[in-house]
Length: 490
Image (cartoon, rainbow, N blue to C red; front, side, top):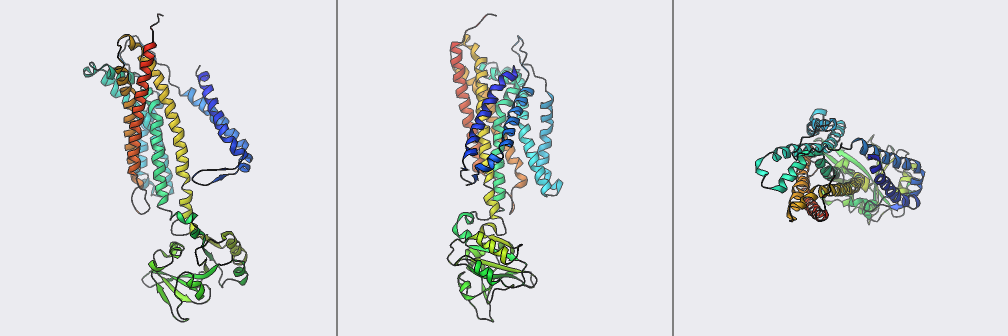
């Protein structure tokens, strides 16, 4: 019976997934916001793995639904709630939750803060969000069981019905809040990881702006100046200066620029005499020049010389800045090809968008995280709506017999608020608080993440709206079904 009830929804979901995927197998699809194009040819080449993924996904959904489906409650004639026995899965979740929290908070000091600790932190965070619904459900069942036995609730039928229902069926609370809690975790971690990567990336505007393609830093082990073949292979309008570094006795690093006067003027630099130097402070440098090579020089000033383009520091190889004088974009692939053919196959060629003390390309690629996080959140929201609707149906059927006791619909709305709205509200508040606690190890510092309090307020407000809508819809549905309910004799 479980398999029969599960088969149709899973097949429908698999069919929808296949239908959404089919257009990308026929035509190229450009993903919104991140601008990435899914090549239809590449997807057709991977058609077999995609088909296998659909089969494995649907089979896994069937297996999980059937194997983990709660056993049917054995309702007794008494209306007193009976605490359900804790299954092994719930006991495992309750025991693992505090361990995951401790591991997430102390993985850095325990493992030295290296890549291993970062992986451990992400693993622990995932474990917290997976086990948290069980903890909230168990706590709700325990509190409700004690509240149901309290004499203070006797005068409030709606609250009494709600607490007795949750005490007898704590799994209902787990099913109701699981998608909400995990959605909060996905949204929160998406914001934190995006913020963390943003602090390690430069100004992403250089990636798409024309100025971002108007200067290229070339580093090679060549011990002589560029060949005439290389100069001839550069795009029209390209200029070139040599780049080096001077290390003072104090350890301070200064960038050194040398080139013909017309090329220096293209960067708005002075042209000192052949035996003289000019020092330009960092604030007076061309914006592109401040960005390119910042990994080597940071905010150091520039020492400018007029002369030929040659390696400026012994045993450091040739470093070149190829640029346009008016910040117009260049043919970067042509420059890369010229450097690899005429300078060295091992030449490093980086436009502004890929250069700097932080990775601009990393900032560009980091946009995949909120994109995929949004997709995952939408899936979780759909699951949340489905779970809430299923609870609405159960809730309405359970409250329908109250029609013989009262003609007022207020009791249905109040009971819905206590049985459905209140668990959602508490789960949202607890989930948001857990998120704030979990992100503490990665906050602060020059490379740390930033917690978005706007997102926190939005999560709490969204949870309150969801709880209100769930209460209103379920209360109305229960009242409507109660009007048509009629008792039947067995």
